[in-house]
Amino acid sequence: MATYNLRRFSHAEGLKAIARDHLLALLNPHKLYFDGRGLTLPPLSASDGFDYDRLIDVLMNPDTGTPKGLLDALYFVHEMATPEAMDILLQEAENNGISLDGDTDPTAADVAVQVYLQDRDLLERKHAEQYLMKPRSFEYYQTDTYPIPEFKQPTTEALSILEQDLDDWFEKKKRGRGSRVFVYPKKDSVWFLVRHGDPLRREGSLDGGQASSVFYRPEKYDVLVYVPAIGEIRMHACGKGEKDLFRRQFGRHVFNNENFFPETGKYTLEPLRTDGEASIVCTDVDGMEWVRLKEIQFFWGGSETEIEIRKANDVFAAYTGRGRTMPQNARITRASFQVKFSDSKTARTVTIRPSNIAQYTRDSDAAVVEEWLTKRGFVLAEQEDDEE
Image (cartoon, rainbow, N blue to C red; front, top):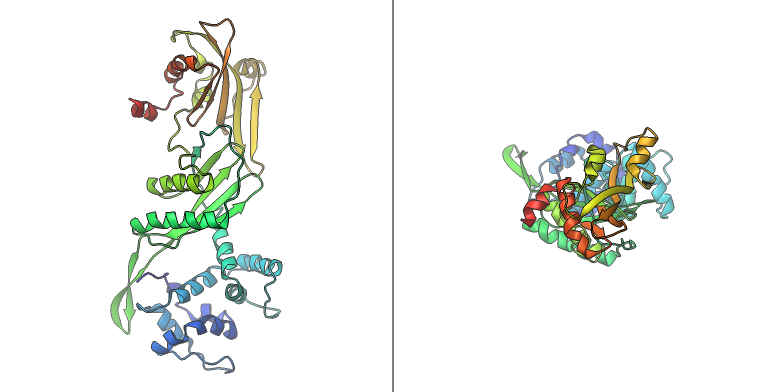
């Protein structure tokens, strides 16, 4: 049996925080189930007679017939029965024309129940939104499509098909179906929240004084953030399998290209920061006479999605002349070099991005530039092994 963990309903105080009429409205769709468990729900017109102790006993001892709709309702209401969530739901109710009962002093649980009964999708969306800012570690993937295409928000139909493909993978991995993808457009980025199940858990329980066990499927949230300005997506997900799933399926359904985000980047620009001018030495590369860094782009992010671009005839010389050093806390997302090749009187431009992009003025420059990039540490070792 797959259920949510119902231990949160082990005290009458939590259920009594919901006004009697609202609680009955939440439970009445499942009246036949409660009748079968020996709990008769009183009519709305009755002034008393609600057996909270028996209700708790039923909830604490779920059986195979426990309706999923009941579990969902209790779970989401409980999760949103906080002062912070209440403020959000009150505003959303006003924005969406949801009529509350007029009680001047409702509890947070009262507000959550009323919103749930009138617009379940809205409550679920607001519940999911709480998880957007919780993750702290992300893994980054940058598109190798150039120029970066304009981002178009996926349609409801596209999201539905995406959820189905995600479900196929989750079901195969014993995590069940029923995933949801929520989209939250921000000023300079788009946040995707993926809600799905985790593997089943089994916990001991008591049913009529007899030892038993309960199965339930925990809920999990993964966060993906796409930055259109630099064609980069970062994700907070559990394992490599999930990250690969999101990379491929979001590429396929949101960007019409399953390989929009390569699995791993070929290049890194960190040698520019760690090795300084030594990173552009080319005396050991046949066919190259000198290299100068002429432009470098840093991504600071933050609420304004800040991008810093430094340009000069020689960026390293400009830093030295002003007594400055390269920023240490911003990611380097692009670098352009002037390269003097032995077969030419004029220098040519080479641009590198830390994905799989190396742009040359002439295709014939590729072999020489790749040798230089490899010797200076711009080519990731793992990628070298794969190519070999």
